[in-house]
Image 1 (cartoon, helix red, strand yellow):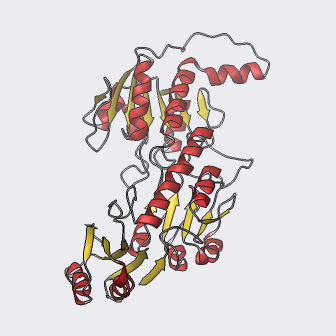
Image 2: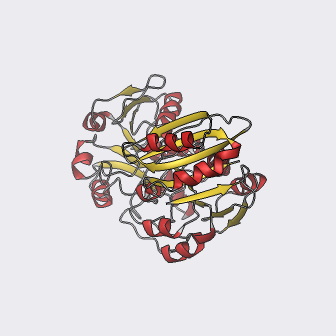
Image 3: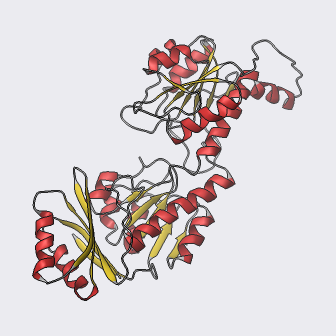
Length: 410
């Protein structure tokens, strides 16, 4: 249980950015007063525990694991930024119970991934990967058998979030018929049509593309039974998470001719750095496009991700906004001039707000603005009060047994 007081600006706060995060993040954070250290690679748990001790903000991508041990070591850690879409590399609950919100970039690489998927649909339909490889090897094989236009074909999108819906929009521009399945109710874009079940989608789609997060529900969700439900001669694309598809089942379906091709950008196990010797059962198979997790690897996407996450981090540090946090109740109250803002994360048990309001009342303070948001584990309180009593109020709040973290913004 901690309390900190920091200036309203981020002057002097230390940020550690790992895994070669785009310079747009570095520049934006420095412009807002942070001291930024950038490293090109990931760190081991032991290395990160040592490095995070004097850091207020940690920025990572997909290879760095933020474990409970790392959270415990980061006594001064205020926030974690995942400069990517996925956040399964962070123990979100451990971070939350330490009063540390985690932010990600759910929007910025949407277009880059969607464009790659549409390019791969055309490549698979025309067997372009095989033809290109043959000509590079000096072999001339002009073939039309098994090659098709994508116009009029059906594209099945599993996971209709930011990326999936954008894929649907682009696919319709190609003249494709688009169906989708999502466990949540989603607003269809254009003429995209929802399916009532995954099985229904698999049975109808000529191309199946996966855009789901890594969860217990999606773990190994595409296996022998699901592939058997797909149309014979269909294609499977996965640019979501490597744990979603059972690779041996996919390889068997491709070798046996059940599927006509596949495009895979993510794998159950991926190298931590660029290297040689990558192994996969999919290597060498006909009409199989294999890429090294590059769906969002464009200059535009990485620059946008850097800005998106950096903006969220600055808004939290300077104003207490948790809008876009994946593990914290979301609040984004406007700043009130002439006040100090007290931020308090606490265990969500009965009586906390009563105790906090009693503290304020006993000190004769006037609350000029107050927002409380909760989830099943924690409450997050943003309180704007008179400047003269802010430090005394925050110190008293931090002494409550329910306190997780209290901070004052001047």
